[in-house]
Image 1: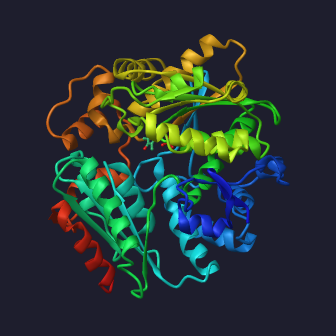
Image 2: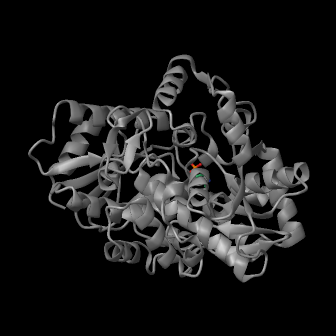
Image 3: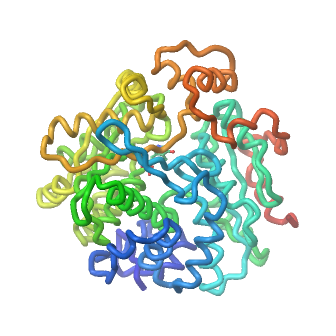
Length: 494
Ligand SMILES: *Cc1c(COP(=O)(O)O)cnc(C)c1O
């Protein structure tokens, strides 16, 4: 029993159970205390291929799986799926290094975790003696749904249904989803906005669970969202990959600390950096970069989390978040105090705010630095990095880039800096074009071409041939039809 709920340490689970359950029964997240006590040879890990690193790291974090099993799962998840064999390449840009996390099958950083999760889930199912088929339900505002479908596509023993708001995603995102291949994937547009779709999905989960609607049907519902430990664990790997690259290039010697700047939303990406540090990797400061929704900047500076504030729609939409779920895991790991965490989370849901004790704030300040950058700042950063270094970055990466410069200015003694890049610039072509001083014209596909003409930066293959791919999914439904839709798909033979 390696995992326990952040809100009640007596609620334990094996790593396989934690992956299958997603959330702990009391609504807490599963966390493994005392990672730093694991016997982990981080220096040897640095000498391995990315898949080799993934095997070692995932075995350490998910001890139910044997080395041979994990090797196989990693191989099945990643081989031939990414643009490069190292999965997440690093590129020196100016005096810093960019870690490109978007070279996966849908050009989104979520590919790193969502390629691995289906394989962990099906293996966890076997370990727990569960025969049921897993049916993944996801509401998406754009990127996650596509990355999840691509990850689960044709993975035996799984099906996935993605709901997106009709008219509420970009043309490119829609095209990515409705052309999705695979016999076990299913996409429907839902009339209403994203919150409507998200709420309705939660209601389907509650109804199916509460009334046992799938009992005896050989199917169980699950979700692919980022609170699942099986999504978090694979993200630890690229911190090692980047560090090894810096050593190879002579930027740092083994043992020297490296600072990582992370464009943050739900706090999964940056928390993986904390895990890497706990496993022994010489991680210096973890810099948390936010957009105008800067609730985390305030929190990490003051120790007060206050979600009662305006919600801004920005050009970095994947970071438009006011309640950062994975932060709960960090607070638990730093304090080891489940009562405290249960109390803080209660305050958050009842009053919309909480404040951590002074000793916890002190620990946070030792590990993290925080800053934010608004839309204007992000576009300026895109223009500047392009002009100075001929590197084209997307809007989320631009936020991190700008905050990295703020961090370095405020901390002249900083270590070598790695900026995590979470999306291809072609995912947000209009804002990127504007950033480099051009006016976007035509529909989103035209703008992609325009960006390519102006910069010469290659368009990722999965985006380049989108327009010509056949549409396979045309369902449009009302919210009230979602439950029947799900039950119908659950009963259907593939
Ligand atoms: C999801 C996402 C993020 C935020 O990552 P978290 O793990 O939620 O903090 C940042 N950028 C992009 C492009 C994303 O898709």
